[in-house]
Amino acid sequence: MMASKTIGTKFFPVRKDIQNFVVDWVKYLKKEKPFNDDDPIFPRAEYEYNELEDVFFTENISRDQIQSTTTLRTILKKASEKIGIPYYNPHSYRHRLAFNG
Picture 1: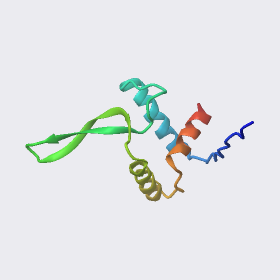
Picture 2: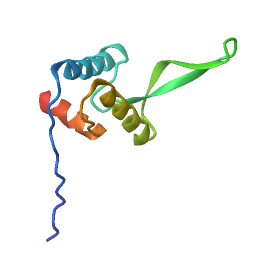
Picture 3: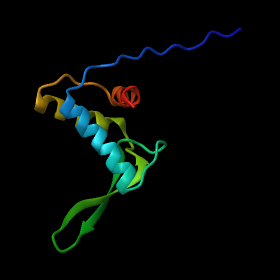
């Protein structure tokens, strides 16, 4: 008999305004894009080049996930520092959303 793999998960408290922001983002993805439960919560941006202004911009998002967790971790760390809350890794957010329904 093989031993089963156990993965510990830690839920974390989230201020109501932050929770509402993330829940509203998921609702936006489902209603406006329309994403479903199998699509990523943090999708990859689709960049386009504007030759006239010589800049890259994005107005669309892909159904693909961000290519690197480093990108998402960097975004979350900076956002956490900016608003003065502890940093939690991206997977923690997914667990919290699942917990809250």
